[in-house]
Length: 301
Image 1 (cartoon, rainbow, N blue to C red):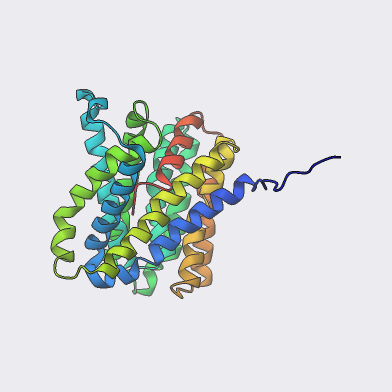
Image 2: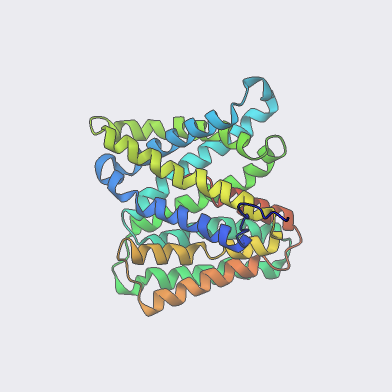
């Protein structure tokens, strides 16, 4: 008599895990609008970071004894860069479409990847992406929001700084332990502007929504991307992650009803193409892969 297992585990294709991670990131951004309306962009960033910090601290339980003196500058810088990106990103999506914001923000990691490739030809990818951003913002229409674009550019700077610093922190603290050390710093940094905005507007609904947003981003995407990375090559993973601006447009359309024009759709194609191109032929694949892995569900936005 033969027996069959009661259940069989179904292995999901690794690309689907990466796609689910990107959808989770963009859904968290789109669903942040309700909280932003209550406590402002800075207040929302602070609440999400605080919730994320508590979750990562509970999961990793890092010890202060693990931190050496020479680790402190990188940890502090990484936390500050994450906090900067979080506030700037949420302030940007208040003013410009989600897909446009993600595309502008994507210039940060894309520029770092191109510079690190040590290949002059790779510098064409940020230029191509910048052309895509011009099509997305359509400055000739006269309807561009300079503050929104400025905030998105600030988020791009924060993301680029994050990638540079995460390499140093990653040499000492891997995975969730690094997040458990830097997310609390980001939460404290954003408290300076977040608490004044949120003061007097906090209630159980806002707090519960903030916890849900933190689970959607960065907790769930981090787990999904770590699972995907075990079964994907670095180049394949980085190329998939170049689709992030396209998912921003998709979620913006479906959830926020932000319909792009034909020119804006062409701009997204250019940004995605530039992101995919930057992943191919780079001499420092490990650097680029680490940057995409760490930055794309984190730093928290």
